[in-house]
Amino acid sequence: MPEQPRSTLITGIGELTTNDEGLGRMRDAALVVEGDAITWVGRASDAPAADARIDVEGRAVLPGWVDSHTHLVFAGDRTAEFEARMAGQAYAAGGIGVTVAATRAASDEALTANLDRLADEMLRGGTTAFETKTGYGLTVADELRSARIAATRADAVTFLGAHLVPEGEDADAYVDLVTGAMLDAVAPHVDAVDVFCERGAFDEAQSRRVLEAARAAGLALRVHGNQLGPGPGVRLAVELGAASVDHVAFLDDDEVRMLADTWQGGSGAAGGRGTVATVLPACDLSTRMPLAPARRLLDAGAVVAIATNCNPGTSYTTSMAFCVATAVLQMGLTLEEAVRAATLGGAIALGRDEAGTAGAGAAQAGTARLPLGRIRPGSRADLQVLEAPSITHLAYRPGVPLVHAVWRAGERLV
Ligand code: NIG
Image (cartoon, rainbow, N blue to C red):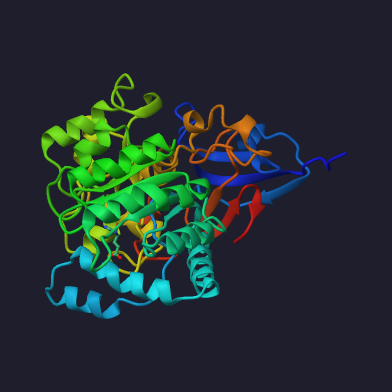
């Protein structure tokens, strides 16, 4: 007989941010965690009995961050490039090649240790689920080992063979490889395929080939689009029903409307789901690009996710709290909107919200596919407790490490 899960009542919650339309942002709340799931949420005074009880003494509780865009399988250092950028040099995709050379030269152990270091740092910062990408290997063998290493820690793995055309190679021949032997090798290890659709990386026709091959392989689609200037990335992502288009720093009104429309009536997106616009504020700052128009996107009705884009070139931070504070202080989001985008928004981008996980349960072992991004019965018990009475402090006290405790899948890890 399997052992009965122990239930824990978390009470004394000064403010509970649930992302649940009915429950909202509650005061004097409590919740029950049983096994890896949340089984009850309500007023502290109505709380049921449980095997164990933890009083968080008026602190704020919110879902763990869901970081839906990172590049954590890499080796090497790009401090000099960053310093040159801060002295006025523009970011160019070519810098990726420096990390590719270092990554190819690194052992599996070194790559795994670096991934673990960053994943541990994320957890201490309140991140309880994350996606990470390949893209610094760019050979069949190096992309395959990147995907395998990524899968040891990440909740979702994305194949980004189409990150850069390796030096000295012909672009179209390289796309043949990405859409052929490379995709065949990595497909069993990944959830999605991404393409860097940008001047200096892959053009519209090449990006389309990558995405169509991914779709034929039954994988979700992602696009790095409109990062360094206007371009075809957003239009392509919407046309092909991508799960997300990320960066989106340069959007005209039509592109904003197009992204919002993917959520109206299910048009334009695979399986009736729209295309999430993922904004990456730390990257915009680090590359001295305009901040993505998250306010305009939300006003138009788009679904927005906030992610770190942690990578050694354009955004070397694991801090979702920094991204949330930037979204509030500089992009015009309210605290509630920013927290929602950094939790539920990421879950939707990864197909790990309720709608995305519906029906997946039977195919998955155990409860590995409990939905993420909300605090309500049935969700995975991924929580962070702040050393503060409300989420307001995330922007009111920017830069201050406010994480007091973290639960992931019902287990207290911080
Ligand atoms: O998302 N834009 C492409 N890829 C990364 C940057 C990678 C790098 O410069 O190493 C990004 O910003």
